[in-house]
Structures are given as C-alpha cells and as structure tokens.
Length: 359
Ligand SMILES: NC(=O)C1=CN([C@@H]2O[C@H](COP(=O)(O)OP(=O)(O)OC[C@H]3O[C@@H](n4cnc5c(N)ncnc54)[C@H](OP(=O)(O)O)[C@@H]3O)[C@@H](O)[C@H]2O)C=CC1
Ligand SMILES: [Mg+2]
Image (cartoon, rainbow, N blue to C red; front, side, top):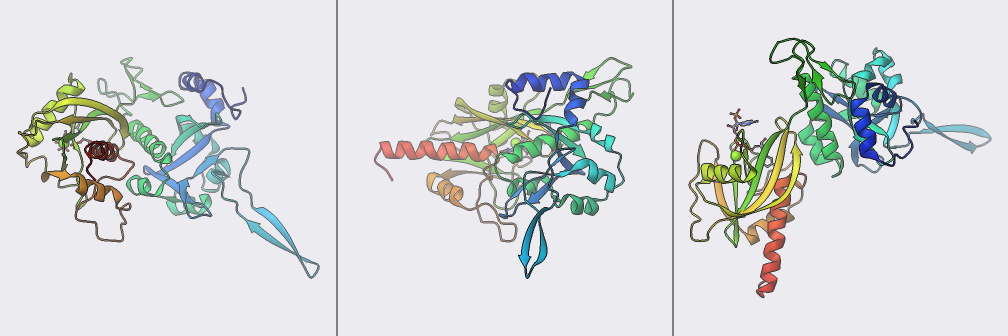
C-alpha cells in the first residue's frame, strides 16, 4: 500500500494503523513527524513570518538547498535558498547527526493523517541536546501554551494532541495493579500489562464548561492562577458517574451558589492543560430575579456579571501581547472553547437586540 497517496477512507485506514503493528511500522517509513522536547513542540518560522508546526519526514522529499545559478561576468554565483515548506528536513539524517539510531523513530506515537493520507506521528526527543536539534531542524521548541498563541488555528489541536499522547505514555509506564512495566503497541493507542492482562487506553478527564446568562448579562469568573485580568466561563471536572447536566448544576451551585436551567450543548474540545481534559461546553440561564452570586473563595478569586458592551469590547481586543501590560478585563483567546461560548452569547445578544430595535 502506498501510504503517501490520498486514502479514500481515512478513518478505516487509521483504525488499521492503530491496531496492526506491522502496518503501523510500515507507515512510519513515509510518516510525518512532529518533534517534542520535554513536551514542547518544534515550531518553524516560514518566510512570511508565520509560525507552523515543523514537520519532518524519514525519507523522500526534503529541503536540500534549492540552488539558483546567477551568471555575473561569466562567473557562476550559487545562491542556496531554503524553501520553507511544511514538510522539510529528513529526520533520519538529523537523528544520525545528533547521535541517535534511525530506529529511534519507532518510539513515535500515531496522531492521525493529513488530508493527503500521510500518517502523522509525535516523537519525544527530550534526551537529545535541544539547541543542536533546533539548529539541525531550523526551528525552535516552544512551550505549548506559548505555541497556542503563535500557531495558526488548525495546528493548535494537533500540537495539543501530540503532547497529550506523549505525556500519557510517559506517565503510564507501569501497571497500577501489579507495578510491572506496561508495553505499548506500535501506534501507541494502548499499553498492556502482560502480568495482569490489563490494557490501558489514553484517557481524558471530562470537564463541563458553562456560560451562564441572566438574559442580558453573562457570568464570568477568574481563579487566582489565571493570568491577570482574564475571566472565563465556569468550569468543573465531572465526578465519577455524573451526567453532564448533573456536573453543570453541581459546579455552578458550588462555585457561585446559583441555580441554572435551559442547558444547551454548544461543542467540545480536548484541552491539554494541565493534563488532558475533555471540555464539554454548554450555555445555561438563571432566573433574572435570582442573580446574586455567592462566590466560593476557595475555588474562585472573583465572579461577576458582564454586560454585552463589556463583552463585545473584550472580544474585539487583539490577542494578548506578552510584551505589554494585560488589559483590565479580557477573555480567553480564540483557541479556547470558552471564547466560542462567549462569542456565541454575544452573537445571540446582538440578534435579539436587533429584533428589539436596540443597537
Ligand atoms: N478550554 C477552555 O476554554 C477552558 C478550559 N478549562 C480547563 O478546565 C479544567 C477544569 O476547570 P476547573 O474550573 O479548574 O475545575 P474544578 O472547578 O473542578 O476545580 C479544580 C479542582 O479539581 C481538582 N482536580 C484536578 N484534576 C481533577 C480531575 N481530573 N478530576 C477531578 N478533580 C480534579 C483540583 O485539585 P488540585 O488542583 O488541587 O489538585 C481542583 O481542586 C482545567 O483543566 C482548565 O484548564 C477551564 C476554563 C476554560
Ligand atoms: Mg471550576
């Protein structure tokens, strides 16, 4: 099977790679690799100043310098131009240069497939000299939180998934029943303890996030650990056995002492910080006569109702610039599902204001 050709049924193809060690090992030969150094992904700046995830291949196409020949006074000047392409440097060659065996790529974990059917893998290279690698790869390893601000939208979830999978494997090397080592399958879709027979699958912790509205205002809160000035929607981990609705009622009651109704599902997101969470985002309302918040100070530093005007102004603000003072009030950036909830609420308000002839 030529793995670099577009694959008609990508889901089936990925399923096969997940389950069939041999097929996955074969896929590694034409795979695309995202490198992580102590869980920080490798980014590269393109010629247009945009950052992307640096993708490396084990064989085939790479950016050996592209030579331009200029004839000046009958003498040839060679200009070596590095063309910035998403798929660029030969990974095996790089590994060799930094003293790693080429079989090291077998330690990668399967992430998914590109639109062209190229399998994507994440590889932790934390035991290799960071600056030597950055030089060889012409990129830099960036903390994931920072990378989220730098990467174009669709690349952030991939970077997060790569990190989450690596972290899960790093922290699940031993069976919790026997203490014996667990062994991964080739794709990394599970680990098994041969002593107890227990199979461990990568896990996410379900979290409910909810934007509560009283009809004209929405409720946002901040924890002490949030960056200065940032307020977000209320959130909380699901307890064992709880439904989304039960978690939502409990968390809102616990954190701000309010009773919610009209729960509407909005969307979901994998969230890598600080561990892998599975965010389930909802809208909900409270009775406009019962909006008095009673903050649990052990959980939250503050919780306040915000008007439509305050929210639209916060949404208009450019992404946070780490070199400048943070604004007094700002909302999570667009890659966070909290932002989606706030945006949806603002759109809904705008619509109902139009219907009522308000600006
Ligand atoms: N993508 C987005 O838009 C947003 C994502 N989030 C994420 O949602 C998650 C949960 O939000 P948060 O409001 O803090 O949750 P909670 O309100 O449930 O409060 C966190 C509490 O839960 C404990 N805890 C940590 N991990 C787990 C777990 N896996 N299961 C059960 N309890 C746990 C913490 O303990 P301790 O820390 O003391 O160990 C802490 O006491 C966070 O990871 C946060 O990053 C939040 C808002 C926006
Ligand atoms: Mg919370």
